[in-house]
Length: 205
Ligand SMILES: C[S@@+](CC[C@H](N)C(=O)[O-])C[C@H]1O[C@@H](n2cnc3c(N)ncnc32)[C@H](O)[C@@H]1O
Image (cartoon, rainbow, N blue to C red; front, top):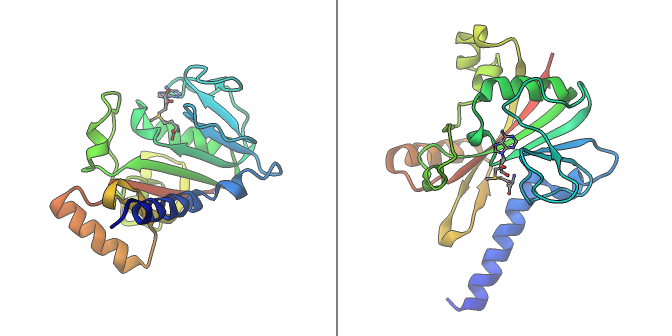
C-alpha cells in the first residue's frame, strides 16, 4: 500500500475515533462539560481540570482529594479520557462524578483494556479495567445486583466501545453486541487485540 493510502486510512480512523466522543456536540456552549485530568487536551467550552496547571485556563483539582472543590448537580457531561487508571480510589471517583453530574447526566470513561500494552506503558497507572469494571454501579447487571452494597451510587452503563489498533491507529467498535463480545473473547484469550475501551454511564437516582 502506498503511504498516501495508509495516511488516508489513518486519518479516516482518527476521525471515526473522535466521532465516538463527538467533540463537536460536547463543544456546544449550552452544555456544561467537565474534562477530568485534561492534560494538554483542553476542550474549549469545558471546565478543564488537572492536578497541575498543564496549560493556561486549567483549574487545579486533585482528584484523589475528596470532596472535589466542584459544584454538585452541575454538569451535563463528565469526560475522563485516560485518567481513571491514574487515580487511587476509582469507586470514590465515580461517586464524586455522580455528585457533580445533573440528573440523567453522562460520564464518559476511556481506559486502557486490562491486557493492552497501553496498560503497562505508563508507570503512573494504578488500576486496570475490564469491560465489566463499571457494572457494579448498574443494578441491571449481574455484578451490580450481587455487589449492590459496595456503594449507593447508581449509573446505567449505556454504551460501550472497544478500540482496536491495526497499523497503529485506534479504531472504535461499538456494536453490534455479538461483534464486540466476540472481539472481547479473542482479546481475553490472546491479548494485543483490544487496546482501549470507553464506557458511557448515565446518572441514575
Ligand atoms: C494520560 S494523561 C491524559 C490526559 C488527557 N485526558 C488526554 O487524553 O490526553 C492523565 C492525566 O491525568 C492527570 N492526573 C493524574 N492524577 C491526577 C489527580 N490526582 N488529579 C487530577 N489529575 C490527575 C495527569 O496529570 C494527566 O494529565
